[in-house]
Image 1 (cartoon, rainbow, N blue to C red):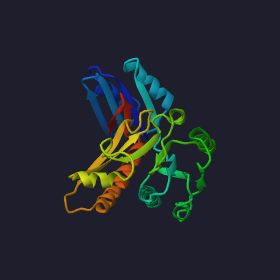
Image 2: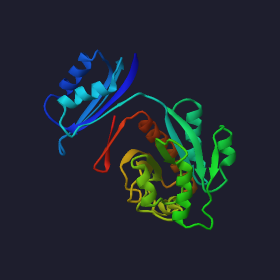
Image 3: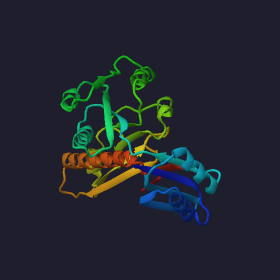
Image 4: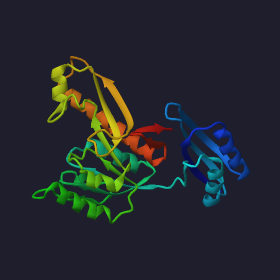
Length: 277
């Protein structure tokens, strides 16, 4: 007996939940949890079900294909630990939070290594017994630097790459190698306050909330499908450094939340947006 995650998305039609559940029953599978959603505007059906039992994945998929619309996507997954690569630059808050959660067993992941263009965070990472690989960008074009990173990544079976405040823009040539597998975090002031020190800019404008957004990376800068967001309130009494610290606290929590959702197969991506269960 084992537990599986069955992920389905397709065109919507009447009776899908009943038909799918009937297949599970006929295959002697017990439903542990189930979530479904219908996007009525796009006529899209999404379903995430955890079942346990003795499963022949190919046979179950074939049975489901027989009762689902022809364009249905069906994924049957064991809840195995996924391989994650972290990328960072010099800021430690987002990276450190993930490393601690991983150490505490909160994440269904094996962190294979941390890649950075500086040595700054090496002492932190090595405290957790995780390989730290420096790929310096000094004297290299963006394309040359990314090629060196890709050469490192080819040595791993990568499920997700997490940009834990990695402060270099990735080219489309890099991103296309890992579609919907690169998770990024940024402050939610964009695009209002871009460039150097957005928190100081926000302070000077008297913002009343500070937030963060985690998203998948695509060809459009900071415009990929959103996974998780959060905010906290501030007021005139906060200095820009206070805002920066609060912003970092929000960033690290949102990024770790987004990673956890991905590791648990709770994200469906379509039309540059997500359905989260």
